[in-house]
Length: 377
Image (cartoon, rainbow, N blue to C red; front, side):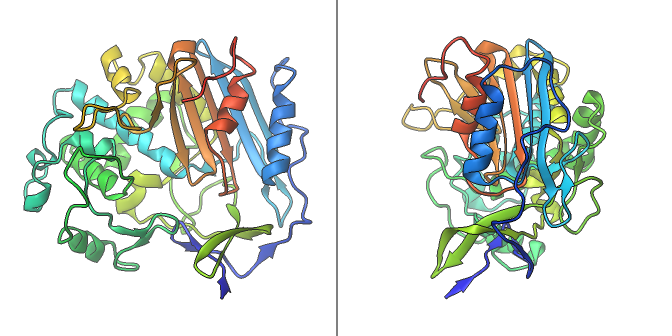
């Protein structure tokens, strides 16, 4: 049996866009001055291979945006081009904004990453009492997931966030806290609740005031496909579920993405590549966090119970490789950013194709700006 997937809790709609539809022209809508010779060739190759309809890429070096361009179509069926004003759903990249909010609370003396989450949220289940804030932030908590399928983001009680939250608290731990890594949305739902309490306002407001407004990210907003988000790109996927397995096809399907408010710590932001790059510059230049130790905490892998580093720091993936270590975030395999702290380099790539975007794509961009190729993890 073949059916369209409910992708990120959004079933692909009845309409589809065939593979013959026009895909990303490589003439950028807005151009940077004298970009590296191989950069556009890399982007063109990646867009062709993955059949990405539309994309923005921005690069910052030494605190300045040195490359920012837009390519292709934001809305394939209506032939609407991606422009500088287009915003994309950044999915799980939103977790990094939550991570910065946590570190701001640490700096204000309101939060201790190594304290149990139950210190800030009384009434958590007994089995959850020892789980620390850092274990939530690094996905090493062992908590069960209130999402039944990561690919679909379907709640364990379909369509009912409150009932899902109640049910997940009755479920056993998957493993002892700190034992291993397991990416579950429950972690960041809890972090959102902690932020609400300590900030004295909804996490979305705290993030807007303390990050988006500070950086001047006027086009970056929370919202999903229920909401009217100005200049937002449609999201597409080439995948179908065939006999229970996800299969890539030669056809683009529209997706319908829904993030209930409780899950918007996990993936509810829309932004542009330029605005996100300015956010990364502000982060590196201490405009969002005052202490170098706070920033270092983000891109330092948290240690597991066996003394070995896990794959995450606070809010993102950490690749502590010998050549060009990187702090990396990816959302729905369609949006990604990377900070190369030792190189003072930041890269953002946003697309409207939920498919296969991962670190090699970003490393391929970085290779145009670094003295040597990024090393293997």
